[in-house]
Image (spheres, rainbow, N blue to C red):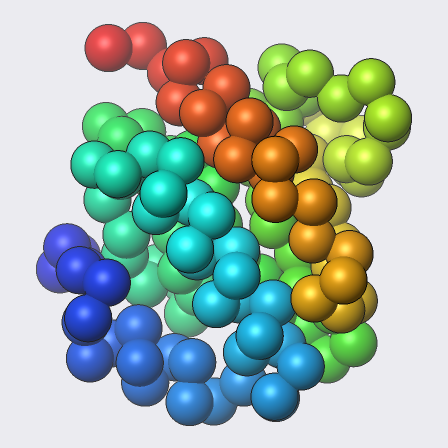
Length: 120
């Protein structure tokens, strides 16, 4: 897969397909992820933005009524407020229905923590 940069045409094409409300959520999540881990790799995989650093960290999954931010090793993340959903062995996600639900500090901390869960 092609490594994408913040000005990538593939990411712009992806964003152009989103509803206005989902586009705002995705833009904010993307900004948080890229700021939290400046050297993260961003790719379009499985039709959605995926972020990795040697191994997968998280991805952004737009749906009709919300956008999910999923962490591949989410079970290991600190979540005292129990915001993360999911019951699988490893993956956890948060569903965001509006821009106002984005908790920037918590999401940035999860992204940094998710990186720390991966072997170097």
